[in-house]
Length: 166
Image 1 (cartoon, one colour):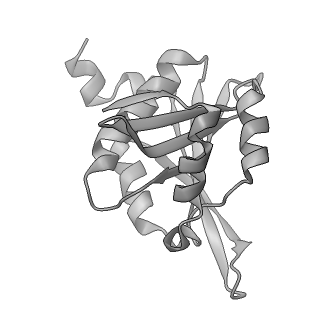
Image 2 (cartoon, helix red, strand yellow; image 1 turned 135 degrees about the horizontal axis):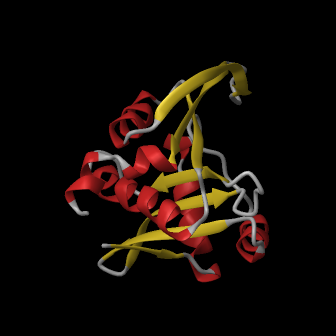
């Protein structure tokens, strides 16, 4: 199990996860060309979670050049649910952001149609800051709201799991 930089060779596996029809309400998707362009940009970082050498999840971070030291979790996807992966991946991802960037704030938004993800982010220590109402329109015409979450560097530093290892 490892979290490491993704490469252009990972784009097909990333696309396979993000275009899974079960995720249509929860995460967007980019074309392969857009992924390649983002990977080449200083403003984005793609991370791959590998188990037994196989990409099983990915994270796309954005705003890495933001002068306000904000990093955005643009997208997170995994090849399987209900496997306990989020309990391994999320702490590693949060630690990666704060250990490898100057971020003071790590933020994300999550669809109101995805309470499972909300529970994961709350469990990890993210704070719900508010709701942007009916900001996403699904292909069937239904509107969904988005919940904004964030974690500040000082909150990360005071996480119980961080204190246990210092």
